[in-house]
Image (cartoon, rainbow, N blue to C red; front, side, top):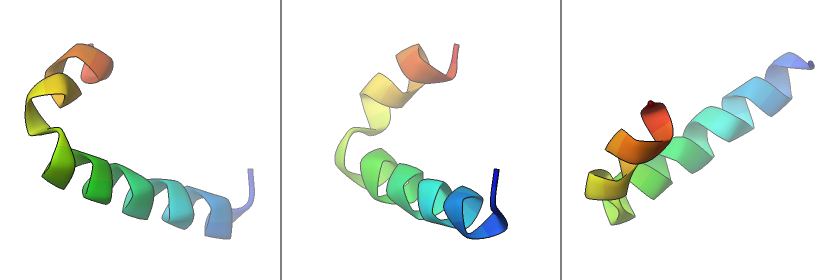
Length: 29
């Protein structure tokens, strides 16, 4: 997997956490 894809995914997750911090627990399991 390309590094830029990892970085993009990380940014997407950060935004996702800001919007849905509670649901994050379920997905992180």
